[in-house]
Structure formats: C-alpha cells, structure tokens
Length: 148
Image 1 (cartoon, rainbow, N blue to C red):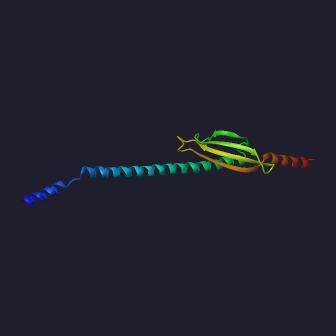
Image 2: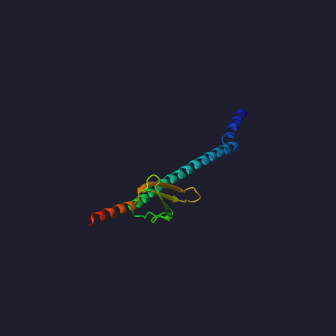
Image 3: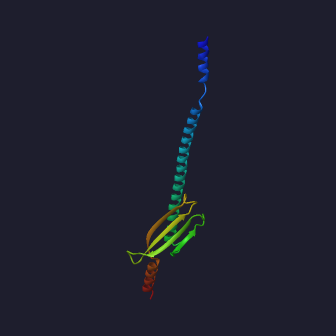
C-alpha cells in the first residue's frame, strides 16, 4: 500500500511545469518575437523605399520629357513643388554642353524629403539636347534667304 501511495505521489508532483521551464519558454518566445518584428520592420521599410524609388524615377522622366517638349522653360529652377503632390520637389539645371557648342546639358533632380530620413528619396536624370536658339536661328536664316 505504501509503494502504491508513493507511486501516486510521484505522478501527482510531475503533472505541471516548473517555474524554470515557464521562464525559459517565455524567454524563447520573446526572443523569437523580437527577431520577427525586426524582419517585419525591414520588409516594410524596403517596400516603402521601392515604391518611392519607382515614383521618383517616373516623376523625373516625366519632368524631363516636359522640358524637352518645351512645356517647361529651359531656365534653372530649384525645389519647385509638383502640382499633384507638394511633398515631391524638382530642380532643373541647364548648362551649356561641354562637347558640343549647340547642345545644352539638362539635369532634372526629383526629391522626396521624407520623415526622419527613413522615407527620403532622390533621383536625377541628365540629357543633352540641342539648343532651341540654334533651331530658331536656322529657321530665321532660311526664311530670310527665301524671301526676296
């Protein structure tokens, strides 16, 4: 009978978890949770940067095409806000071409300042275009030659 009570007593004592086991499993869970939250934060930040980079490239190409088409005058400007989103700004630099006398170097820079530097982005495109004054001068010379 005593052996039976001792066997039941041993079985009753081992049914729950010890405090050490609970603390150890809690520590492992919190460590895994911290690692997963850092991975999640890095993924979100990378997604935001990718979206902003794509938007910067598209805005820069669009503004450069407007300059080439003549919709935007060929004068240097700094930090001009976009009409559709004031958080984006663009700058235009017009320099005389170094390789060709009748070419202009047009540089368009698009910026998004972001908050705290986490979501800031900047993109720049450069293109050589023919100076519109050369076309105008050539057209005037031809009209003067053809008119009596």
